[in-house]
Length: 213
Image (cartoon, rainbow, N blue to C red; front, side, top):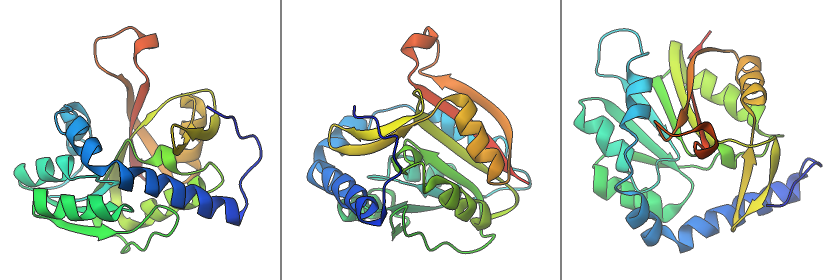
């Protein structure tokens, strides 16, 4: 992966957006087939157990892809809304989960204020360049109800970002991720590494749960 120490300008941000979405658009069918059986129930439960008040909960599945987790939230009796920038995924998710799905990308979000009890960002926020992440996190903070909860799971790294197999990604250390989230107005509830039960060097995913404060 190429390291990017310089922050991208506006034209580069548009290239990041278009190329990353094109990658998912071109591989939509194989991505759905390859991820449908992934078990992320640990992550779903990490979000739900920390939301306060009676259910059902309004959940924003940020970067919902083909709709696997969107359907899981609906089957648990909640009211999920999906969001994805890839048109093919939006259509797949609507058909598979039978839920409302918004066609938006992370660099141009349009979210209702104080609407959701929880945001589920599973393997999605790492596509946001570091220069744009503070704004995106503030927008997610704003769309949560008071004391709402955000779950995020991202591949971890050493604070490098750049192109990786046709997609742009930012790979943060735990300390950097904590700083981004705290500066956006969140308080950490817990974090853990995935997959479960493996040595740390075999756990590439950092999962964390945060409350709006």
